[in-house]
Length: 477
Image 1: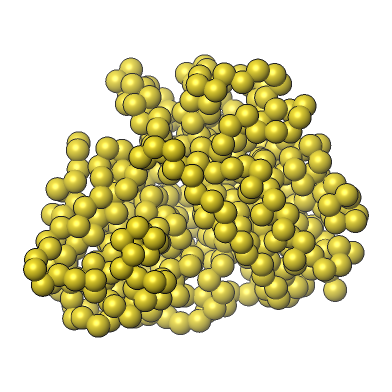
Image 2: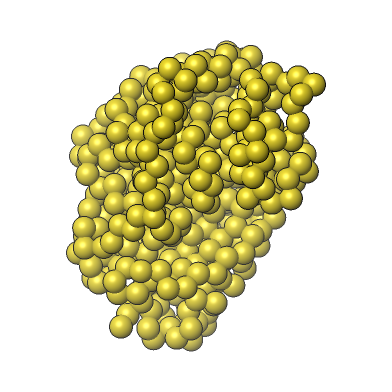
């Protein structure tokens, strides 16, 4: 029986999964890659290291290429790569979505009164999070010569997998560049002029379940179709079965990403949520609302790698459960600014409310609680009515966090058996594009556990009010 393989290229590592004809994951391989920090607030990746890591995990799950009907791709969005079309070599490191180096340029654009037109065309706020100013920075500061290609990581992987024959992206990734008109579904000349980006650099935009070409036969011994591409959060929404208007999910990965499917009708938020593109039941392009926070699970990595108060991620839950509360300690992980709903690029992290009695356990618990507080921030700002929230990402394995999230929202939290809904979403889009399935409804939704709220609304609201006061102390505007 045919299998589908999907690449999930994330911010800190890349995985590949193999899925059978029933939509069940049967194999997975994963590897991390380096995070490069040239200056405070600057974040880069080595594109060639990402490609090598991707090829490595694919070779682990593709045991017999004759059994693979298609390879799908999902990826960290907004991260920007520029490479030479002739040599295929990147001209600079990839500038990661978390990077804040172009914050001054975004501020200058706002002062010129351009944020309104950017928001109208793209559904995005004018922020260094998105690709356009990163691309402009490379063109201004690296000054590469030659025939250049721009792409987000999906485009870079497609180029390499196809042996340089495919320069393309999908509509969900294009919608995150700040160069794409989400209403007309096209690269926008006005935006290209604002950011001084040559149209010749841009990839062709296709649908999330379209065919993109085939692998170079030198990679796996024969050509394998490349089918289906979506940004990681859109793939996660699809993987979670949120294909009808009003359904929603939150991803707890390096960052935190709330997405609400709004169907064929564009809906704009007046309170900090973004309008973006996502996938309908058959992989067709629909609209969605999204809230994005820059640091979620990365806060736990910070405890491990920088503060060194835990040895591994599960230890944070052990510490959190060892105490009844944080004792008023709040952890604001604004290491690279604050995303939705604040969009304050200059805000910086803080631990608020420390006393002589505060120790490792209080800080660890506060870091976990911060992930849940940020999710409620997005939901309340967007005016979204939530009765059930589907969740995915590495941090959902933490039972303490999931229960605290249910308590804080007063809503059911539905956790799948497979935390990797992002990779599954990419596999399902690839399978639909390859003709194995007709729509998402034919595929399973695996539920591991449902977390019901146990805290009173008064208690939850009091804790959240404390969070809001703590955040106010780091805001700069």
